[in-house]
Length: 158
Image (cartoon, rainbow, N blue to C red; front, top):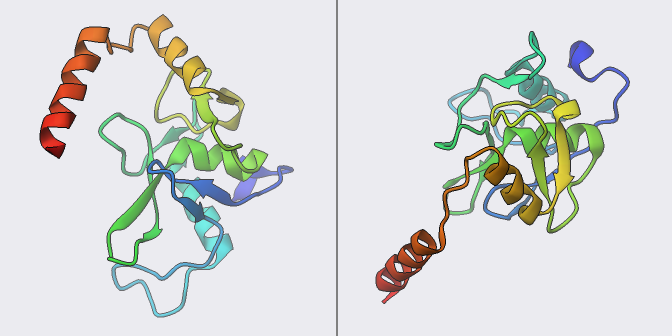
């Protein structure tokens, strides 16, 4: 973990983007032929922080990303074998500050999706997060667009 987390408490239960509670700090099976032994907690945490570039003010996630630009972290597998992925900024926040309270999201002060600097992350409601996005000109869910999306979803479910 090096100097990135010196003097900070490490915590470890997170919720992935689908809402499933996941223990990031639990040993997990290695993937892609990485060995027969589960990966230790220390290895997972070190591997997580190694994927963050701390050379600038924003600590940028250098691993895989979701389509929206947020860092993506493999959290494990579902019983059917599908991957469970979590957001890197949520894990960074949780490792330093502890569990994210139910019903709250992790917002960026810096408005930079790949940023994982815990000093740039804060807890808030989804309404506050949307208000942030509107102020930054990133929120384009007009009532008309929302109605079209609802109609499309209703059509697909029928």
